[in-house]
Length: 129
Image (cartoon, rainbow, N blue to C red):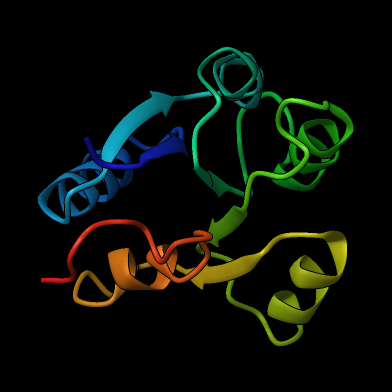
């Protein structure tokens, strides 16, 4: 059984792309389309990693990250910011806010899964492709 990645993304095309790339790389995926849905799913399912869009319809990603970090069951879970806003200084700002990594959209499908895998304690537990 692969490690579980929770994808919090409101854009259906991006969500499908992230899911497909991760599943082909041996991960199991969970999906949420709003920050609130993602927070609830993270608390109940306890994923190994979260990939989160920064611009969500209900909460921004930074606020959602703060709420994840405050919950005992999700405080330790690595969270990766993905955003189309790839402005100068965004990476530094998001890492300062507590994200474990920052990936600009559009993602590089050839390195996406490996980049996430490096954030997991045992390197993801799945072979690289």
